[in-house]
Amino acid sequence: MKYVIALLTTLFLSPLAHADTNEITVYKSPYCGCCTAWSEHLRDNGFDVHEIKRDDMDAIKRQLGVPRKMESCHTAQIDGYIIEGHVPASDIKRLLTERPKAIGLSAPGMPIGSPGMEQGNHKERYTTILFDKDSYKAFSHH
Image (cartoon, rainbow, N blue to C red; front, side, top):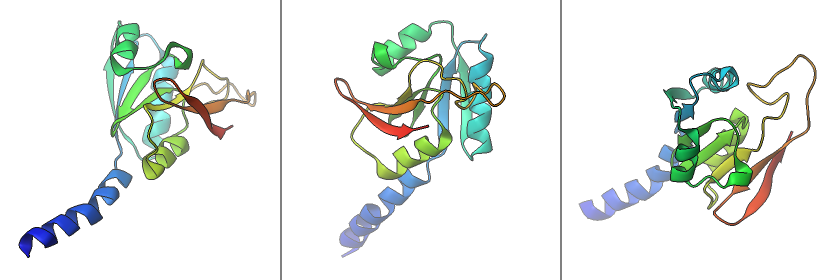
């Protein structure tokens, strides 16, 4: 009976544990100011950000499985997902709630007006992409 209760408790609480994940590791160049601004955006939205400054960002991206066409300036890891570039905190929260089968999310390039890339009132339209090894689909439009 104790085994059944423990199993049911684990099954019930596991999704809740995923939903509350807020620790994110951000790999960034030591010379990138927009990456630091993106980390601040995450902190302002309740994430516990751990920055790791690296000169070998291409190697990090290859190691973590980021497809070349999804690349941006910084790469992050959170709860089994990869976040590439200036992805809004709201999209990361949605990803962690919905938990789709994917490697992660990307805001390819460096869209003006995305978190960390603010330039006054100027904003480019951009799409956050949900990506896997060989598939890509729109996750959110901004």
